[in-house]
Image (cartoon, rainbow over all chains, first blue to last red; front, side, top):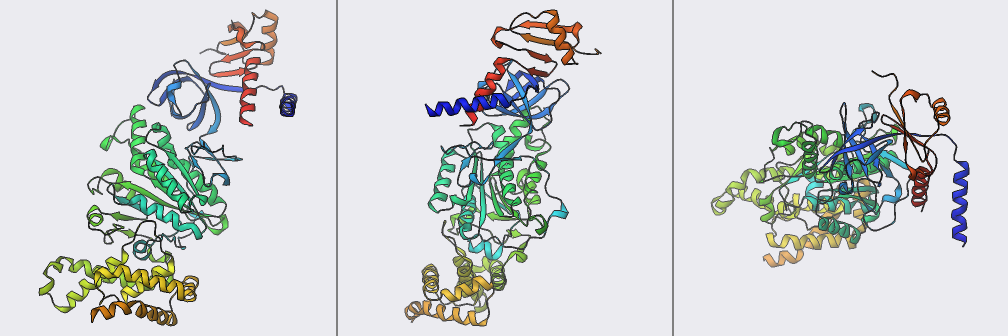
Length: 504
Length: 75
């Protein structure tokens, strides 16, 4: 009985406090419904990008304003609508509710939970479309974002506030790199947002499961609009992810956003534009497909300390066909981002995983976002790898080469082996520095290639167990001084011992 | 074109001229020459005033609908 009394009280208080003022609603009527787009008449004073609501609770976003009609894309099941239905303007721009309660949840682009849990309570709404912070609000990218992947942290370092594109054919490990980066942020206090656009539901479920198993879901928000969702939802998903990221950035936090993937985003936008009868351009994409991505990626930035000092790092993923990076969408996004990580099928099939083409991958922020320790060891690494690539063609004539060339080839092969890594096995900074230091100093040169992986495990194990102080030093100071080098040398020699006896 | 467009007033029963006049006094955009009175019993009580794309819902049905939404969302 008490419950009901409660309700009665609530109803009474609401009815009594409600003033006798009246509200003027802006209404429109559906004339046509076309594949996720509704054409309405009426709605004379509605703004572009405003949300409108139908009688059955379905929302739509206004996307075209014509003299006598208004087009809106439906964010929900458009099959429940029929011609003649009334739509009311809500008066608010398309926005998503934001709060700390979203961490650990899987939601759709309008903030509704799709992981079976309760609705997330929130007090604020952040707009989906926002002008990116201007030049005055930003500061240069200085702090590194540790991905835990040796090849990336050493050669293509990513800083907080940077946009780094992950590009490659299907099945080359793009999502794996992004997910491993998310998993590595466990101790780094970086909030992660994973945006799945047009992905298979099974893949999203797998990723959420993976994150949960690795205890990464607690600091991650997953926004998903899968392949079965209407194109409008897929079009808005990345902007929703960016809005949530901005909420955390405004609180001064560092955020990592992964857009998986923007090719499918462009397809969804193309579908919406073609249904709206907008003129088709190259490859049938609308004329503003560049702006579609540039306004999204420009919102990833590093704010000045005056404005909180938060950052958003964006890792957009683009899928190429047959390695064609000169296609329309890949070239667009390459010109927007601050660098790219190229993944190649050939390297993947040859067993080099992650299949990163170090020659073509670049990070335009580069060394300014690397710790001193890593910079010290990475410089030599780059040089050795470059020389290896030069000589790679000669590796077939192994027996007829002079010693110098053989040395380069050997060193390069060992380094390539060291840069290989299993998925979901991320390395902390000190381990990365230690193993790359060992490789570039030449301690692996006499080791047979098949034993390198074993050696690495043993070496890092030793360091973890017996040299925790040394590793802490490298991590804290972020440099290696001579004392550290001597310490590392000791452990390298110890780890090499069993292999040296084999050689004899 | 027209100084004030046509207004449709929906009510649960046919309204007298006096009622229409009092409505016209409270809402200036109603042009009394061009009012059309439509009867719709599902309103239960109150009126709904429609003018071009603007709607003012003062009906009991509308208030019940809002109440239902409010209760549902405050769960």
